Amino acid sequence: MTNIEYHDAVVRVRYAETDQMGVVYHANYFVWFEVGRVELFRVLGLEYKRMELDDDCFITVAEAHCRYRHPAKYDDLLRVRTRIAEAKNRVVRFSYELFREADNHLLATGTTVHVICGANGKPKMLPEKYRPLFFPPNPETAGTSQRGME
Amino acid sequence: MTNIEYHDAVVRVRYAETDQMGVVYHANYFVWFEVGRVELFRVLGLEYKRMELDDDCFITVAEAHCRYRHPAKYDDLLRVRTRIAEAKNRVVRFSYELFREADNHLLATGTTVHVICGANGKPKMLPEKYRPLFFPPNPETAGTSQRGME
Amino acid sequence: MTNIEYHDAVVRVRYAETDQMGVVYHANYFVWFEVGRVELFRVLGLEYKRMELDDDCFITVAEAHCRYRHPAKYDDLLRVRTRIAEAKNRVVRFSYELFREADNHLLATGTTVHVICGANGKPKMLPEKYRPLFFPPNPETAGTSQRGME
Amino acid sequence: MTNIEYHDAVVRVRYAETDQMGVVYHANYFVWFEVGRVELFRVLGLEYKRMELDDDCFITVAEAHCRYRHPAKYDDLLRVRTRIAEAKNRVVRFSYELFREADNHLLATGTTVHVICGANGKPKMLPEKYRPLFFPPNPETAGTSQRGME
Image 1: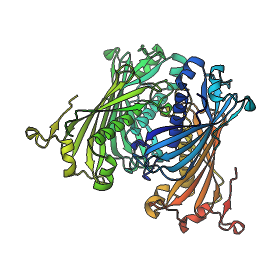
Image 2: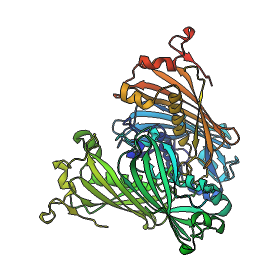
Image 3: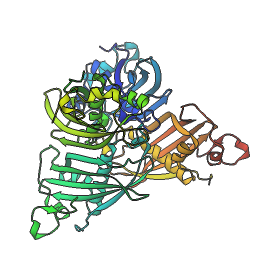
Image 4: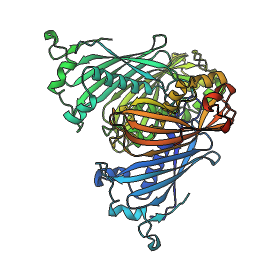
């Protein structure tokens, strides 16, 4: 299960996401990245909402970056390619590539860094049961996994 | 304190709030109405966040309506005039008028109906200490107040 | 083509759409209604973006209403059932029912009223070529169609 | 006028901006940064909307970064401190510090990089009349200004 290198989620640009420049407002790319993360989790066999509800495990955002190459436009069908770029005991880094489905054009790239916290906002270790999903069972990288590097 | 007929809150239109029609996306008016409610509460001596934190009292939205007359545009300074249109034991109705500050033009009107709930989502009575703010001390309207009718 | 009574579009609730009450922020329901309209247009053989680009035809929002029955929650899969409730020469009214996919529970109902305008913001007639899609070819209702009444 | 080192804009956190973690959803920080830029422009004597309308000059976003230190919460009053970190002929970089007004706590830092474009999306030179605002009249830094370095 853990040998998924990346996952592609598809989103269609909503009118609400555009601005008066006639393109998507830049902050919305981070919402799509979130969709990408959640769908990657799902194919890894993990429902993020269960992490919050069952395990008091919140994946908070510590850092977010996006490089905008070409604007996404209204009604575009987009593919958010999401990778776990790095996973440590308390920190996970995801990387993203955003493609326009129609012509496979790369519109944006991004990364987000996350800290695992309890509902109290305090950092905590990723629960044991989730570790195989984030850490491929590779003895050489014990405790830290590098995969899908940007 | 309770004889405030309405309160005017001022918001400036953000770029994020526009869409590719070059005007504000319609759903955002409801966000401004929320700003109007919260600021009306504040002048009534009530911090809404304290209601949630201290009194397990959430003002959930049961109904929302907006009539758009003229479009709000980017960078417009707007005045959200908010009234408590009706208050019952578990239900509060607010009405709104949205004016463009520059020329006092009425851009939109709206109403929202709210049910008071606990964090569990179950309806509950408005705590005693908040009642004078919502119900003006008028013996004739005991338990129900009509004010600032649209 | 025009005898489609309604169309169901599916959306999944995003984390961005929740608020600190632990449910979806009410204004976001109007964004889903927009998704419903656009997807209804698509199955009717109409790309809304082409109306704007090719025909200078913008479907502006004149009125919006939503009745919230049960809260939508994070990660819920939702079905937005959209109908053209009424169509006149310059005005179209849509109605919506929002269901939770898991148990077919009705979470919300709504309507939006739209005026057809040019890019200049002035009302205009719906172009001839789009009329059969909005007006079923029924001689009895010439010029006005009532379908999918709420 | 050009010797303003930074500008502080004040925003209050809206309910719409929170998520079910009970803090502000991370993408919204970029909306506040936009408010910061626009208000910095205003104190520099420049209305951004006039740049678009009068000069076909759009400040598009090429890159956005935010480092989240402490969460902003509902109803917090925030100060967005915005600086022009770097200005070249076609590219402007802004840096941001986000403070909680109540205790002056630094909640987040960020940068955005912008390319000046026409409505056609093509990069263009910053019009002459705006140059003194972005480039302090310093012979040593002819054509490039470094100020308010992060």
